[in-house]
Length: 342
Image 1: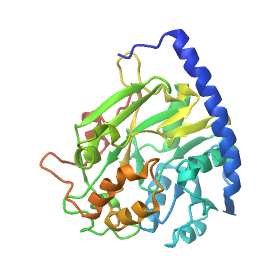
Image 2 (image 1 turned 90 degrees about the vertical axis):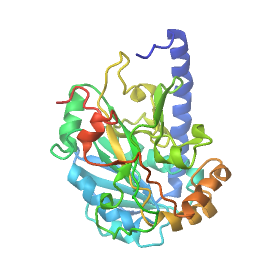
Image 3 (image 1 turned 180 degrees about the vertical axis):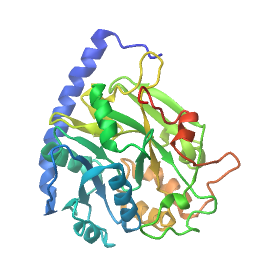
């Protein structure tokens, strides 16, 4: 059970975050000038929209589109950050994709979130929206039999305007880079193992959000500095409003109330998982490229050892690894929850 903050402190945090929200919205409006629209499609008022910033994701994009179309996404809005591998042309060829491009700094756009905030401010208000990276595949209870509109209808009935999901790092059994995944094929054919139990969770009162860390990256790359391990908590599904703004990737959002997706009484709210396909065979080569670009972290030098370790094509699998099966398995492990949805 989570003890509530004193009322005075909670109001003070709300006041601080209201000003932060205004600053971030103003920043997004200014950063929109860095975007060049290449294609704007059309969609229905009740369509679920997906927003994504990406760069050089040719090996993933076909399955990404397949997965989210299957879930019921009605239209995709992409920011292509100067891809050079054909990703942009693939997107332009899709009838259900709108595309913007920018050669500006990913890091200086707050890792793409200024661009996403700008597009959602203009196009997302009043609609249910998915926000996901190209290496994130959202699943949730009953996802294989109930599309996203069924889930969002239920969330509307509960007056719940966002749904959390834990990012679940998937990895192969052999060395990284040894098992190629051809474009258009299911990455889970190779990336089908995960760490089941080494997770820690904390409450961050300023944003009133939960912070989950752990998994294979914490075990393998950050074992000596676990507090620097990647944050795994995300809010990939949100009913957007013009006064919303993303704070830190999709880990937290403003107003603060949208982060309160947990049951304060000790029960369980609904929660999905983002199957993280970061460790495709291309990760070995890309780690050296991203280390040189230094665009993905606020203090990129801190992560040099991480990039160097990935470039060595390590084996992430261990005797405690668990083979991924389905969402029911994740629910039994406490990583996914139906909440009151049945």
